[in-house]
Length: 208
Image 1 (cartoon, one colour):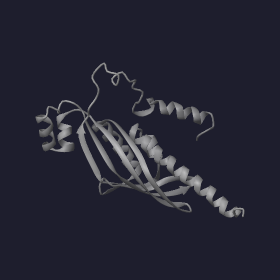
Image 2: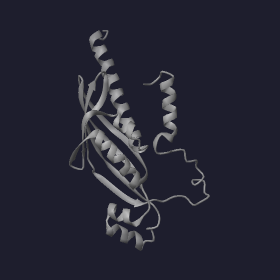
Image 3: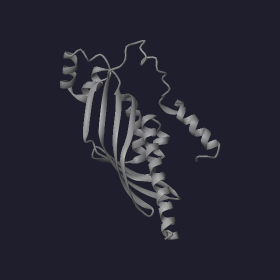
Image 4: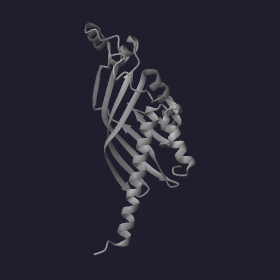
């Protein structure tokens, strides 16, 4: 039997909605990792709420505050969205997504003490590991509420959990090694190559 036309149409619309929401989640990662305020704000409605460690903020205000903080604390970050469950319900929906996020701390004993505590710093000093950089790996989940307004899905609420946290000395290859010779293309902000790529798509009419 052929699929009922209305059922088929609903499935197509739901697939498009899921794809749109997943793209916004990927854009969130880009905004954070490239430390680009404009990109990060674009994932939230203007009246969206972000809960950050138990406090509520307007999400656009939070985006403007968190980017300088990220730059001050970390030389780079990389966020990964993994398990994703989207519960569609018309123009509103909720989602749960797991994440793994890597953060490379700027070197410096003061920052490391504030971030990890004096005990960690003492252990690193005893092991001769205080001089280099350190990597924080955060693992948890994001809970989002979404609203489609004027045909566009954006977050109306973001809540993050912090369920597994790990801090370790960052191990890197020797100077002059194959690893050390890898080209460094990534940048914070609009100098990163992804923005020229996206702009080219926009100019070509492929992407808004």
